Amino acid sequence: QVQLAESGGGSAESGGSLRLACKISGRTSGNLCMGWFRQARRGNEREGVAVLASDGSTSYADSVKGRFTISRNNAQNTLYLQMNSLGPDDTAMYFCAAGMPVLVDGCHNYRTHYHAMDYWGKGLRVTVSA
Image 1 (cartoon, rainbow, N blue to C red):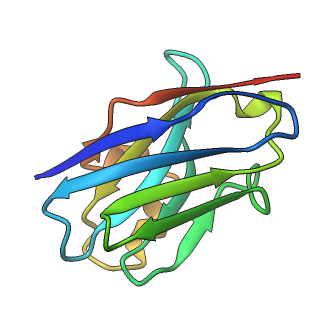
Image 2 (cartoon, helix red, strand yellow):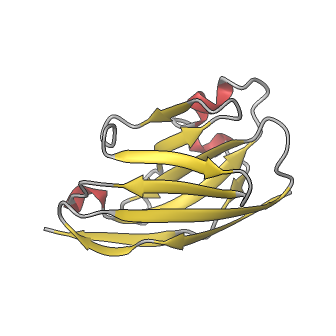
């Protein structure tokens, strides 16, 4: 079992920055795929923003490339999402998630198949004003 608890988020103006954090506890060893997903409106599909595979490789949604950075502090068991150059389209609920793909590279497929993630945080709100 993996437990995830997000923090950070809140409100920002266009062009601003925010950092999200996700504290990871429980089973953190093995081929753990970590990621951030967002949902613009209730009922919408969750969009994979970024994932971080156990080998350190990352992948991002085209809409956030060059603006967002996913990283992990292993000593503190914390996953981060640094969000820069924010715009109104980044307004959404953001969720931290974890999964256990069979192969390390499978993590990158998980970004576009959020159903494959096994564990989810409760989510937090990010609002970007124009």
